[in-house]
Length: 236
Image (cartoon, rainbow, N blue to C red; front, side, top):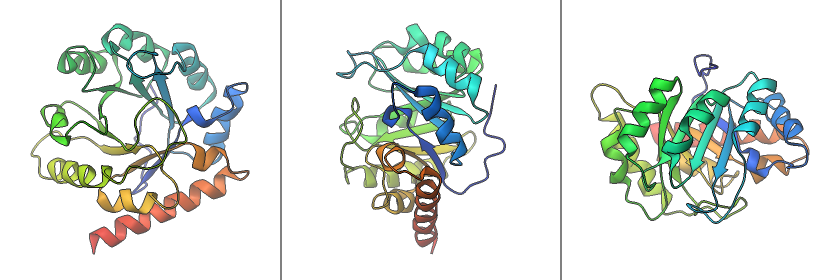
């Protein structure tokens, strides 16, 4: 299993394959790695939990075969417990499920870890940040959605900022096991990146802002620098 042991950036950038060319997914996956991504993010949608269908375990398997970087796999599924094993076996490094899903969230997170992946938990824009609190000792990542999940290319929702701030306080104030990543997904671009980093996010999922650029490496480096700048200002 590829892990995050080598990641030493203050803010990690995870390009979202959802914004790649679906006719050339392997090429799109490789493009992220070559641009210097810390991980590749894959959005899995079931057409029920969200109104869209995207990728399955075979796409994760392809990415694991051709990449050396970690894979952040985000299950936007009503029943992630039914599919957790398939995605771990396909090569997920982090497997993230939603607090709003129709399963025993705590039991599913424990099963993900038992299967060999790092568990993560996500919260939708309408969901209070407190919904993640019961799971902070069980996960490696908390993912705060800054758009309504289901489609790429949406505008960043500023309402995510106070949620990130509250989650960062809760994570940093926690004794014992705590998430390594406070991630944010949705509308991340050069304008929003420093804002979410200042609010406490240390992993940024970006799709259109990276894949639409001819020089992804340059766009990714700029996004990382802007986010690091926001983090530095927050620390002052």
